Image 1 (tube, rainbow, N blue to C red):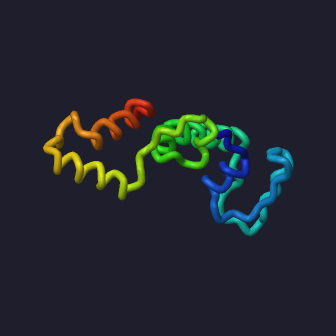
Image 2: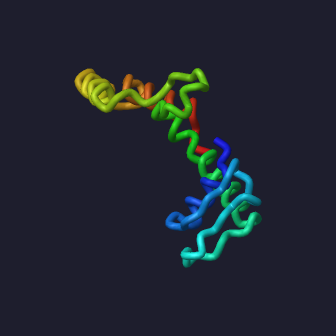
Length: 118
């Protein structure tokens, strides 16, 4: 996800009164009643880079939970719903497989291997 000036502005000065057109810094109108200083273009560019890096760093979490923003990847491996997880866990305990041979472990391991934490 690429972030924009409006995202950076909401992040840096969430309560500021302003307007911006077409994500063009030159159109940024800063209300006189704002107590915060108007961010510079360089500050907004740095905040966009930070937001993009943060979003990318947490991608594995979205993938593991099949977040709507990641569904376009075509990979449908994700954690099962909690009820399914508990059912797998119960069956593994019942069958004496509460180790790395049980279905619960194998399923969760597959998701973690498919979407490793970076």
